[in-house]
Length: 236
Length: 236
Image 1 (cartoon, chains in turn cyan, brown):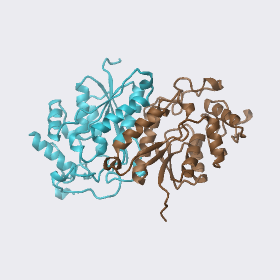
Image 2: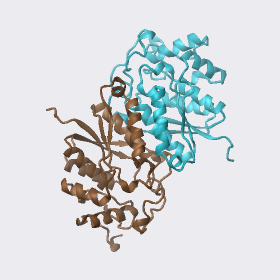
Image 3: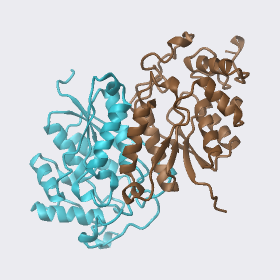
Image 4: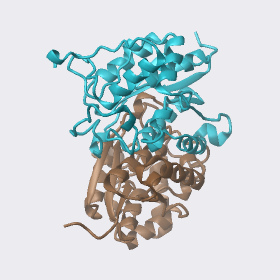
């Protein structure tokens, strides 16, 4: 049975932000088509988390596109460069992070655009947020607006004037704590999400990388218990 | 030994247009880093052609990125939809072609941007041309300009103001015949290129699909002998 709800593509990494963006898309009345990427992450826990979240939040479809950014190199998340640990939270977000993947959001949104065209969707959700501003060029509002403008010149629907592509960034002005509060209010089970850049084999979080530190700070500031499963020292 | 020539990324499909764009990039004084895509083409002849062309024209590197556009469906080139045959050349280019791949040039240029960032290149060459205007939205100058603008907001170099990304489209105003004449003058061996949407197992061209018809017309109008290996009826 066809749904009356308009389709939207939701980029879903398996972390807090994209899980919250998915919950917001569903709450906004969209049929959510979740899209994840297997781009040579050093661990599969992120993709496992994406699968669990898509199911838990009622995505009507979840696709994972395999791409090999590793062919070009250039990031700690895909290369064998050490992930920084134990940094002061105030230093995180200064400069371009070591975990930067070249042109990542450009590539992810390009795939989302292809998926949108095939599913007849005009809305793309991406969970970029304020904390990313300073470090990632492709998380800034001016990048998103430029992508949207380009997307409306790239597609059949744009040329034929039948559909206007909108890139929705519901988290862009929120802090991590605000994101967590918003998602919790929408019923997101953050125990399903994965943030750690350097998890143990069973997927437990290291608690020391930039991503773990920002996540823990977010729960603390939101006043919501942190459901993260952290690795114990003896287990590592 | 490091080269004094600036690096450029050149999108290389294995067809006439991209081979000519590569020859132009080299002639313009760039070290060419050729980039091809394995996106579930129904045949490998196109990628084999790209390898031969990159070597023949002196690309300093040739990478093939694997992406699965098939995950979304939507085109004769990646789905099992019949390729149209024997159309009048005047009808080709009317409307959106059946061989349209959703968001293809957006995705290809996004990967080129990532590759450019890693190699420190600011120039991206893409062989879009006048014949593609009417059918493919993402071959038009306004799309290319919008992509370039977005790219300069997407990257570290753009944000830091150290590099300005340029998307170069040396063929955009040329007819197929003009492209062939330009490439021939630069020494491109078009026998190495592959255009056919429906080749025989040994890579011979069908001579009847839109791409074969446009190619044959181009050589005819350029007044240059067509070096294409066509399949004979008995061989098919």
